[in-house]
Amino acid sequence: MKSLDDELDALVPAPFGFVGVRCDEAGEELQLLLQALPLKANPNPRALAVAEQVSAYLEDPHAVWQTITPNRGTAYQQRVWQAMREIPVGETRTYGQLAAAIRSGPRAVANACGANPLPLFNPCHRIVASNGLGGFMQGIEGGLDIKRWLLAHEQRAR
Image (cartoon, rainbow, N blue to C red; front, top):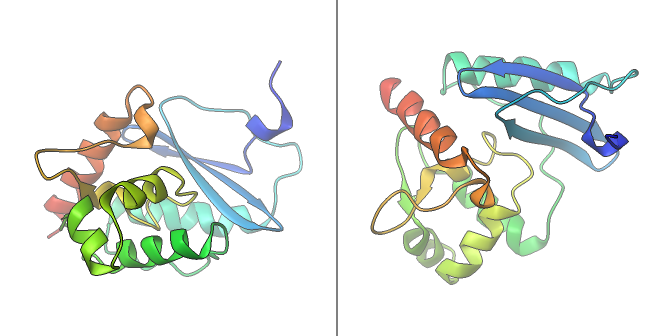
């Protein structure tokens, strides 16, 4: 039996599966999914605006995000996520480069990437290892395929 926490406010079809949207008093949350999860009977009305922005990004990675409220996470995580948002579409940074930019360590940056509640908005897919792709979605099966798609999607739009 699924818990209410598994239910989404909106579900956006994506080439790699779906993007789930949850909205509550703490803000918005996005979830990259390989398969659909159930929708809530009474979804949060803010989810429609967020879902429209997700769809716009999937069409054009240069789409401007407007409705998202990045108010989850610690002050440190917020700093990492803000630095991610400053990476131009189609570019990447290594964990070490991002860590140096915010005067931190690569492992702490990687942990903040793993705790990111707003992938796409906080584009953690743009953070790569110094010797390759690095991780994504905390090692969930299929996560690296999603990361590859997102990076290719942004490269095509350059």
